[in-house]
Amino acid sequence: MNVGQSGQPLRLLIEEQGKTLLDKLTDHRLETFPPTSAKTFRKLSPAETSALLGVAESYLRAVALEFDDQLSTKGQARRSYTLEDIQTLRRVLEERSRTPGKLLPGRRAGEHLQVIAVINFKGGSAKTTTSANLAQYLAIHGYRTLAIDLDPQASLTSMFGVAPEVDVGVNQSLYGAIHYGDDAVPLRDIIRRTYIPGLDLVPAALELMEFEHETATAANRQKGVEIFGRIMNALLPVEADYDVVVIDCPPQLGFLSLSALISATAVLVTVHPEMLDVMSMSQFLTMLGSYLNVVHQQTGHDPPHNFIRYLLTRFEPSDGPQNQIVGFLRSIFKGYVLNHPALKSTAISDAGLTSQTIYEVERSQFTRSTYDRALESVNAVNAEIEQLIHAAWGRP
Image (cartoon, rainbow, N blue to C red):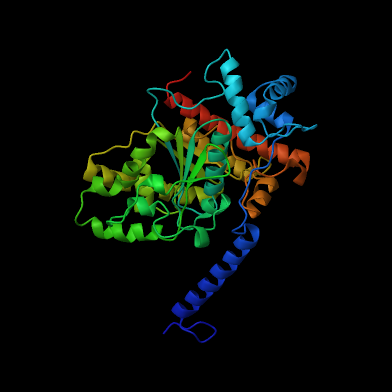
């Protein structure tokens, strides 16, 4: 019998400690985001707003005065803008722009939905942070974006102010749309609006683990395409509602991850430039290639990926060994490594402690140089991915 230090069998000890930790985390989340409150996005300063819209502050003031009745800034001596205000201003400025589509950059006729799977099966690679930053960046810049949390640990869900243990019921995660039972529900009924205009969420919950177990059984009686194509099929009815879908995959290679990859048009692999992480990624890529070959043999389907890129995360430019590894990876993968790494920053990690991204926290919470450096790094990464999306749409 396996007995813990308390004299209990190990299985009972782990079960008890897991429940205790879950209860404490639930209490913490309820204190942070009580059921009576809703998470909100901060207001943006005139400088931030003008930079986001690509206009001078003086012109922004003039347009804001002209459309005062449609904005929340009415009567303010010192204006600050909500994301709803920015949407209004974006539409107004688009109508006056000499470059159509500059301020409303979403997909046009003939351009297909972009589904980006963010993946790595090693924890600590900043996969969830990358997914949250990318989804928020795209929405703030005018893209209709859907974030799907596919990780049963539900970290991305928590970052959007949704407590999975409290706010996500049965069949209210993606599992509700892709499981094999008769009570499966349309994805449209699971999608939730977030506090960021243009950004919707499919939350995660522990019930996603059931898909792994059920699929192992279903594999004996269903065709491969019916198994691995379930996420792709679930997305079809809502395809017209979005420009980009960002999927935060679980940190292991299972049926959920493979189904996400089959549905994806692009793959973003996060990697921390440390030797152990790179060695782990080598095993990950070998296993992934092997699994995708099996999927191809069973389904005859090769996912039509527009791009695959490796994103260096938590990079410290002053760290010599990290620089050597970055050079090593670039020599192997060449242009498949994004030009811009995501820098390690106390501003990003501190924001994560309160389930926020760098876009949500106030600049005043940090030294200016720390905040500006972190924001510049995150924006550079996301802008590079945005360019890849445009290239996939055939835009110059």
